[in-house]
Length: 114
Image (cartoon, rainbow, N blue to C red; front, side):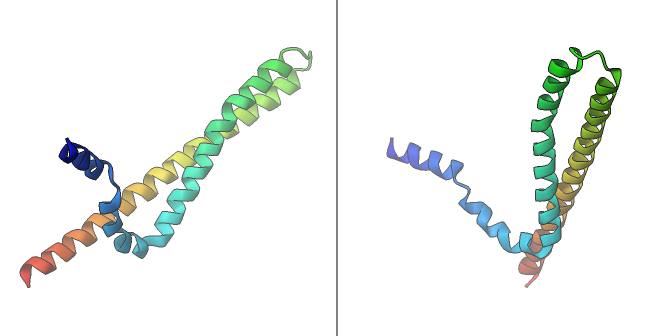
């Protein structure tokens, strides 16, 4: 039974990912871009329902159509920001992953051929 929990702990452990750290540090700009894009996408995703709630609560009670039009424009802008942040996050993460894998393959090949 002790071996099973030990194996489960090893499977759940993220310690083997520490070996990737030297490869990731070569691409600091990609990491920063991915983190910034992730934070912007998360903030926009969390703010979108609040904006919709406010538009429904306050927009339909007032007789002014400009209020609804302004909120709708703001929602469209938030959706565009979310799309841009998601695209940036996808680009940075995919590019970082491909470059790290290429570096690991290069190092493995160099190790095997020596």
